[in-house]
Length: 115
Picture 1 (tube, rainbow, N blue to C red):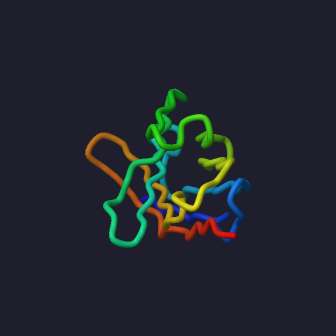
Picture 2: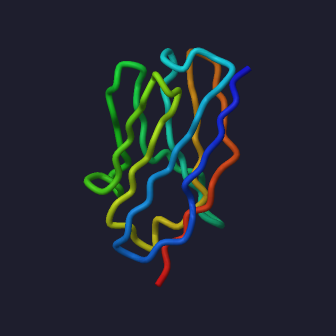
């Protein structure tokens, strides 16, 4: 079983930056595709960024150029660097590991962008 533990959420002003981390345990991190989702109140959970086990990345259009997903397999950690944050980025951010038919979710971490 895979456990994901997220950190780095918090309150930041518009235009600011934040880096989320997600540390995995109990599995083979290097084989997983890793994803960051977010969900704001009253909205559907949205895939924000994806990084494959080979390092290929994809982003939802609304965060392209502002967010960067990366992974450090030696540390079993995936990151989401968030720059130029907007109030619309406010949401609970979730880390997800995927491999074949298996998927595992983190607990979520709150990101609030407000002045």
